[in-house]
Length: 345
Image (tube, rainbow, N blue to C red; front, side, top):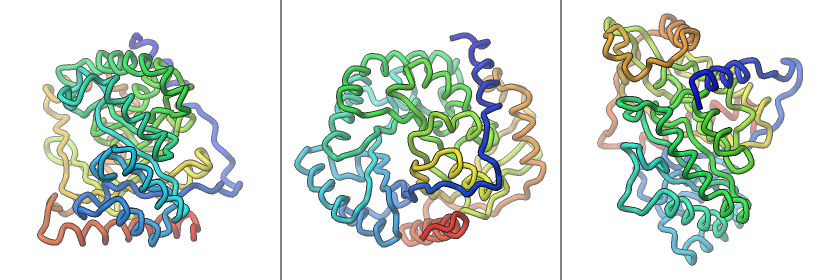
C-alpha cells in the first residue's frame, strides 16, 4: 500500500454522496459505550439494567472487564438478561496490531486473541468485535503504514473464522492512531466482507482531522460507532483539544449526528462520554510533525479552521472524588441532547 493509494482512497471518500437535506433522517439505534461508565464497578447485569433505564437499544461492552469475563456460562447469562431487556449487545477488545505499543503480547498472539473474541461474540450474540490498532504513540517512530500492514495480516489470518461465525471486525479510529483515509486503507486491505469501521467522533481531532471529514470518508464502512463532542482552540504553541458533553463543543456535533443518522441508518449511535482536561498539539514546533508528515494540507486546514473558531475550555480533571456520579451526569446530559436532536423516545 503506497502513499498514492492512500491519497486516492481519501479523494474517493471525500466525494461520497449524501441524502438530500429535506429527507427525514432514518432511525438509528441509540447506544451506550460502557467506557462512559468506567468507574461504576458494576456487574454486567447492572450495566444492562442502567442502560435499559436510559432507553438504550444497544450496549457496547468495549472492554472485556465490563462483561465480567469470557467464560461461556457467564456470556450466556449476560445474553439472556440483555434479551429480556430487548437490548442488542456488542463486544470489543483493545489492540490487535502486534507492532503497536498498546498490544498485549502476554495475552497471546493477535490471531489467538481475536479468535477468542470472535467465539465470545457468537456466544453473547454480538454481530461485531470492536478492536483497535493502537494510539498516537504508533505514529512515531512509525510509520503508521507499517502498523496498518501488520494489522491487515492479522485480519486476513482470521478471515475464515470470522466468516464461518458470521462476525465482522469493527476497527476504531482510536486515540490518535489513524486518520480516516488510513482506516479506509486498512479496511479495504483486509476485506470489507469481514472488516468495517467503529467510527469514533471524538478521536479524529487527535489526528488533526475534522470529525466531519472522518464521517464523509468512513460512513460506507460503518458497523457501529462511538460519539462524543469536542472543543478545540488555538494556544501559543499550536492547539488544544478536549472532550465535552454533547452540545458543548465547537465541532458542530448537531450536524454530525444528523448526518450520521442519514448515512448510517440502522447502525448504533453509541455515546462514549469522556470529559477531562485538554490534550495539547504543539504544531508550531517542527519536531511535532515527525508523527504527521503524511497529513494532507487540506485536512490540517479543516482542523485549523475549527481551532480558530474555538475558545479555551475549562480544565477538567481525569478523576474526581465523585467520579462515578459525574460520569453518570455527563452521560445522561449527552443522552438527553441526542434524544432531543434526533427526536428519539
